[in-house]
Structures are given as C-alpha cells and as structure tokens.
Image (tube, rainbow, N blue to C red; front, top):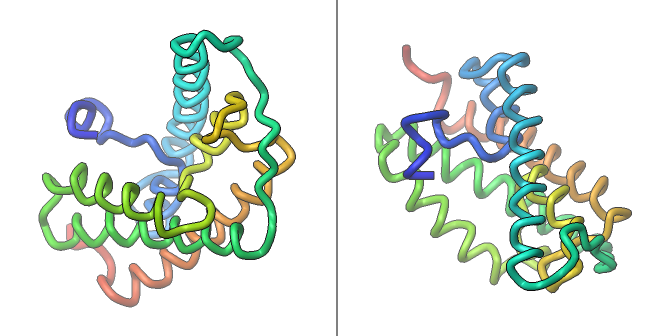
Length: 167
C-alpha cells in the first residue's frame, strides 16, 4: 500500500472503491476499471505464488468455505476494514492507512472464522490456489456477496459517524 499510494492511491480492493462511490469520492467508471485491474492483479499474484511453490500456475481450490458463521465473519471483516480505512483518512492521518490496514487484516485473520478475505479481488484470486488460503470457486459468490453487504453497512456507518468528506 505504501509503495503504490503515490501512483494509484494504492487501490487494491473493489469494496473500497464501491464505498467511495457512495461517499462521493469515486466514480462508477473509475471504480469499474480499478476493480478489473484489481481482479487481474490478484489472479496474477496467485499464479505467481503457485509457481513459487512449485504448483501448477492455475491450481483451482477445493476448499469449500460455507456456513452462516463464516459468511457473517466476512461481513464483519469487510465492515471493520472499511471503517479502519475511512476512519484513518477522515482523521486526516492518511499516511497511516498502510499500517492500520495491515494491523486490521493481521488481527482479523485470527479473529474471524473466514480468515478475513474482505476483498472481492483477493477472493476471486484465492480460488486459483488449492492451498490452506484457497477458496473453492463455488464458495466465491457468497463471499463476494457478504463483502458487498459489508460495504453497504460500512457506507451507512461511515456517513453516520464521520459525515460527508470535506472538500
């Protein structure tokens, strides 16, 4: 995040852009292009990781992730991540976003039953890796839906707690 912030705002997560649309900080067009790039980048990253571990480049995951608890935890992980990002920015501490995101994702990996994917691009990409971190393709749609629900809940909370961004 820190390295790419000057180039693209370090936008690696489609739900961050989606929230930006609803808070007036992003457009549908730019968010759509970013989401496409994020998914492609995530998939290339998964392929790279597979090759580094002597696996087939595309190694479809068989790890089914289902159940109400694991799906609810993905909502919690996504809401929390978005509150961390937008809260840090609204506190005028944008330079800390890379660190607050890292802290949240690290913690949420351990305290959520879903291991906190909280990112549709990562979710799709992890379907290409049949490792402990993978997710079976049939589990991806519900995870992405939960992340989108988390994003919508985050929009409501962000607007209530922080208000609209100041120009």
